[in-house]
Image (tube, rainbow, N blue to C red; front, side, top):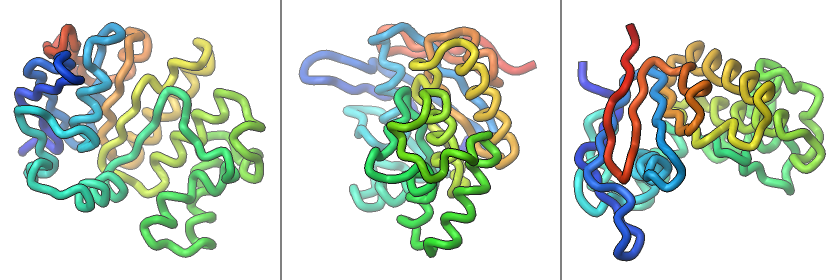
Length: 225
């Protein structure tokens, strides 16, 4: 069976500074993959290339066998909306929307009616343990609650791949463990793949497999038994 997502020999530069120097990444359907590395190693750049946000200078990224380089900007944006979900370190929720509206937004963008989208969003807020914040705005909730809302938003449209970039980096250890447990449980239930960017080996321990990025290059360190 072919991999769901692959990046092969990817390079990327910020100006004349190389961020990736021939990095590889393979993700199977339903797999939780941790991408480890110190700050500045290139792991977040690798995520952005794999998600079709940044175009590699050289190398290739394929999703379900389709080369992302062959898609125009509109089709890549549509792919990210339909097939991918994103969780970032600081949530990146929209302050002007309620928590419920933040979660339902991807569904509305996909053409789902408000009532149906809100029902799905409420279900996910309940599953993530924050049903009582539905009517509040992101600035009125705690950091741990905001990350649960971000996880709910990423999962509400049932994407095939979740990209999580340091999703617990702004939380204390207890909140981080809670968010990771809920995130991994949710992706297991929906059969989504999870690409988890982290520098924390305790968070990486939730994964099936680990790769390490150092100086823009990748190496595999642990596979599931």
